[in-house]
Length: 411
Image 1: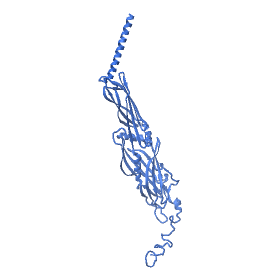
Image 2: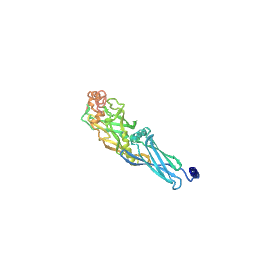
Image 3: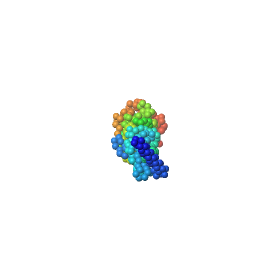
Image 4: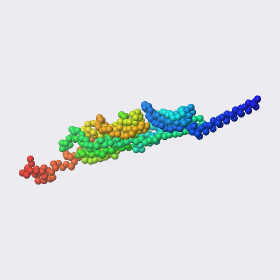
């Protein structure tokens, strides 16, 4: 009896093995004939999802193509990652995805690595405001004994010109500015009404780290007055969608290559370089608003120069206002549109530097305490006490004549 059972078991095992082998051969034959196939997959689209506090959602869509007949489905696992200028900004996965016959799509959702955005900003600026975008997706599919791991990728280049906007905006400082009179008068009775000429203003990025970005503004300051003037103070801000990504007070700005007193002598032109610092930790907050507005940002660049001489204040522009220029920034990271940095307009906006700020920035000067004033000795430098004639000091020339042809007496 036991021997018969063993023989039946062996017979059933052989039959089962033949059936399995037949099924394998059948599947293989159907695969060779193109009736059955391994599902294919790839990257279809990327888009932005929900935007919240310290959260930016990314939606990655993969397409699936199962060539097998209806009723022969399968399973898939997907994994994907997003890099922007060599910064790993997002990664995610989807498991147990159904693969129905025919074509289908699956949405995969993950959050952007919010704390990596300052690192991207650093890489973006140091690469000339150009970022290479790369999205990679791999889908592991299986149908019965058949399996595969097709992959897809998306690449693009993202460019901005925020530095160009800063350069254009702050070039609006170029011009001539005058202050109001003070109670102080020169020995010849002339009231102190200083004038300042700003020329050749250029702006560029300075040193960029993962935590800070320098905004470097260089200007030629001409002093047309007979007396010295202090180096102007510089205050301003950069707003993107009302987020102050950069905001500097006058006493927070470093002035490069200026002597201790930083005075500009009368009649001289000297170059001054001002360095304002931007905190890169403000970038994520702005980027969230940029994404939420379909990758569009309203950019405002504003600034003011100011100085004070013996109670007479000169602001550039005048009337205690700041130059304010607006731009419209559009990118095309995941939104299908034309990237651009479009100039809108320039005008003025309120900005007032207090006298205390000017003092802390070294932009105030009491002429009576300068060597120039002490050297006046009763007259302006170069003034010998004459009224412009040569030897006798009388108007009209060296013959004492006043210009008439009668008696040559003084009128």
